[in-house]
Length: 238
Image (tube, rainbow, N blue to C red):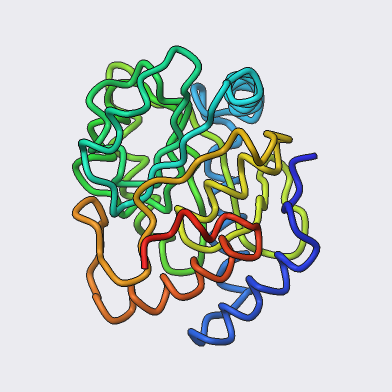
């Protein structure tokens, strides 16, 4: 378990890099620097990250329903998932739509979720921090802020390269939303217990931390492909 949930997941990540002109070497450099940066960190050491991983895994496997929240979610949608067995995974800034964190297992983020992500981090929530070539400076800046919080968030680390990196995982996926789905599946959560909300291919959600609309829409095309290949395409709003 904990590997990418489809055999061609790594192939898709390579296709994405080729499509956008990105380098796997840059992705690997960011990931390795992140892993090294936290090697001796008191709160985010490999041992503490593994404890966070096991805690989230147990929470998700014991959930009656795992709800993956995408950036196009409407606040009133979440209110339908208020049963005791409902557990949330939020994609980056979509955590801003979560009124309280009692049902939140974790946030999957490459750290562009802005104030919504920072607010959750300041409350000690668990965040799966994803490293790629374009966010090396961002994760350095963000973690420097987070480590000053009275209650620091718990961290799990992910990457998107083909080789194994100690203390990090490649769960598959590309955007925060589809990577959150891949994460749940990689843990062994039964597909029938997973529901997606806030996934759209033609609308930039209000919780999305974006800087380039055209670029974001291109990324959503890849999100649709990955989610559809995993047989969850019926949850995507057209």
